[in-house]
Amino acid sequence: GRGSRDALSILIAMDCPLDQFFINNAKRLLSTDLKSAVADPTNVQQLTHHLVAAAWEHPLNIIGKDQLYFGTKLDKIVLKLSSRGQLKRLRDSMKFLCEAEVSPARSMGIRDVSEDSVSVIDEASGRTVEIMDSDAAPFKLYDGAVYMHQGCSYVVKHLDLDSGLCQASKQNVDYYTEPRHHTRVAILGEERCCRLNMLSMRPPEDSVLVRSGGVNISHHFYGYNKRGSGDSKILEKVDMSHLPAVEYTTKAVWIQLPNTLRKELQKLGLGPDQDAGTLHAIEHVIVSLCPLVISCDSLDLAGQCTRRDSDPCTHLILLYERQKGGIGIISQIMDRMKDLLEIARERITACKCKRGCPTCIHHPRCLDHNESLEKEAAIAVLNLILKYCYQKK
Image (tube, rainbow, N blue to C red; front, side, top):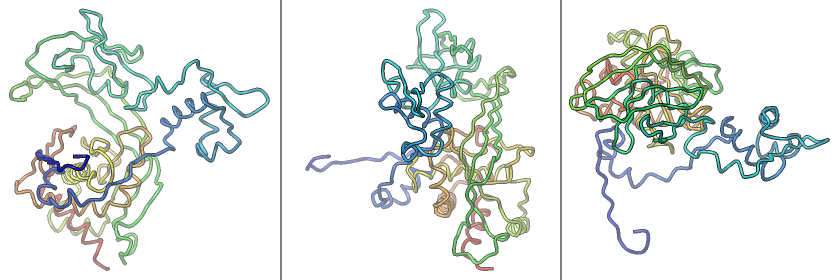
């Protein structure tokens, strides 16, 4: 197929919004232009690893032209690396060198940017079953979790994040586990703000504004569910309180509904008390369909699945990058948000289900298990948002 001969490609559509969109818009699959890769060279976590590897090849000069290549954060990161002993300052200069015997790049993972890892140890044999990113470990290796590896199930006995070790026992069990936790999003600051439609004549206070900036993500674990392997029924709810919260900063984009739009929603019988199910559903569809307009995977993004009234961002449509520091996806979403909202409305209205299903507003990784989603209300909100885009005051 890559040569001069003809080839046949077959797409087997799954019950997810992205695949179903292509089933209903087959021409888009082959007519869409190839997208540029997304990367953010200023991401502190990635840049830190990069600078150590670069300093091994050639000394870094923090007051010279190296700032042109590595950005304005160069001096702070290099000085921090020097204080940790990872870089050495050359005498009578502002140049820094990595003196490792082998290139640090060889020990850096290409799947994540975390510096720490957790080894899963088989209690019976002492063998290392797998090595996992420490940031993902609390979600998969909590005490009592069933962890699958190469078709075998292991029951986690104890997770020690400080030592980077997880003791697990190989067992045949008739259930699987899922964590119960709450994700709280707090906005740290606004970096960009623009109208959803730059040509709109509405005043700012009466317009739908898209904002982006830094956010703090905090995952609080409080237990897990045991579900039967055959029917997925909950067999037991186990409470836990000893796992620390997982926190990190990243980038997010959000929309706050203007008061005039809120008043129109109230006329339809939709108040702020329904935001949890309505805005949650909209976030699901946007996350699922993002690969249509920018180069990313839907798993790179997340919304506010476990909304609570006390959360500061409960009444916002908000998406954040799962990767620490962000990799540049949010800035591209800012520029294509109107397109995403239009596609989201198209997908939801095209689905013939009554209350929501995997082909429209459900998401396989929803932390709230796709409960309490409001399909009709989501359509109403999207209709009004897009009406505000094109309608003059």
